[in-house]
Length: 321
Image (cartoon, rainbow, N blue to C red; front, side, top):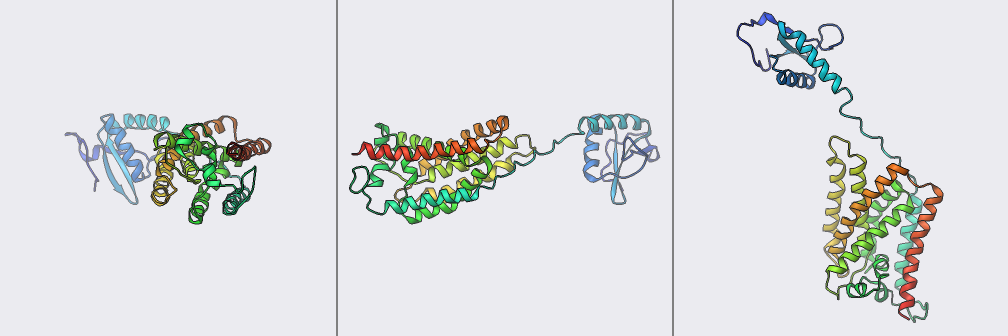
């Protein structure tokens, strides 16, 4: 029985309809899959060629009037030739770099620094150092020129729960970013997203606003990963599958980490994510053109990130003497 007789022309009895070959370049006969039957029928319909679809065993056959068979085969051959390489194959996945040990040690250093801030330490003329007073993201002081707070605030945490949440949840995204880009570029991009996020937040907030935490940079990592995936798979037929998951993860993190706590700040988290998007876009385009940095350049970039963080804390300690 036909699935759907279409455009049956009066004067063409059933015996004047002939099945199209399943292999246009080969022998007669054979059956079509349901998907190919539907695509071929759309071509015939677009070219105003009458057709019928009939079930034949486990497959399908397309029938056209005898006088239209040569025309139908010619149109279908042209369609198949034009779409032979479509859809294009997805790009090969970028191999990840196994630098998890380095990333774990970096996260451990962040934890050790938090432990240091709990103790009374005499350093650079401070007896003791009041780490949070010197390094928190105080909006008014940032806008007055204390630029180092944009970075030092990323290294501070309000309590151990705040620290643990950033290390466990943020560590997942940071580890992935480091394995994708290498550690040096990844940490520099994290610092850039954190700095820009804190700066935008300080500009919009009340001058008395204060905040601490690495969450701004972590949300930057989520934005960077989302854009990297979108750019890398931009030729995919369904690119939304590649970036909707990171965006959903960012919204979930905003709900879990960004909306509560005395010293956490929803605005800074949101800005970190938003600035991560263009940073990831630029990073992926550069990698496509020049490739990931080699070992030497990666080490140099990682060292630059370390110097930036230590240099900002040194500036904070020197300014407050």
